Image (cartoon, rainbow, N blue to C red; front, side, top):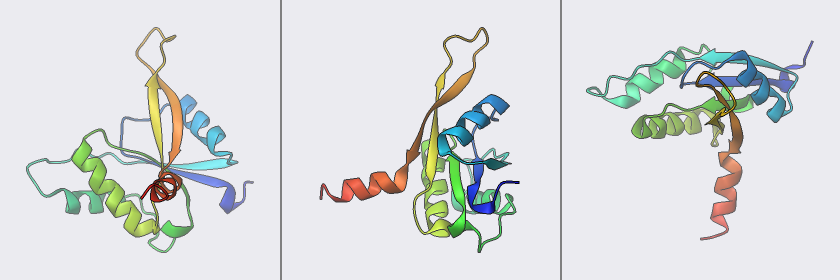
Amino acid sequence: MPTTDRILHIVNFGHALTPAVVDEIVEAAGCEGFSLHEVEFAANLSELLEPQVVAAIDATNIDPGDWPRLNLVVGLPTHAPLTAVVLAELHGRLGHFPAIVRFAPDDGALVRNYRLAEVLNLEAMRSRARTRR
């Protein structure tokens, strides 16, 4: 049984992840197991985004005290303003930026499919950017 610190929590706000893509994410993160939180979220763009994002993240049922300790990777929504609000809320809960995943089309597939392109450590990117001030 994997230890808690080797469990990867995948919180996905985008299109549903296939088992193959989940396996790619877990392998890239070097973890022994995972907990997948698929957030079914269709934002109402006529309403304020922040309360909708807060409710969606609350629906993951991750304990508020656990957020800062999680091995976490996030699949972001594709709507840019919504993505910004998700990142702001997660930064507040985590105390830092999360790692995120980027997908690319699997050109070898007969049906439109996506594969993991990279895992981006936003906090590390932020730290590197600070040296360029």
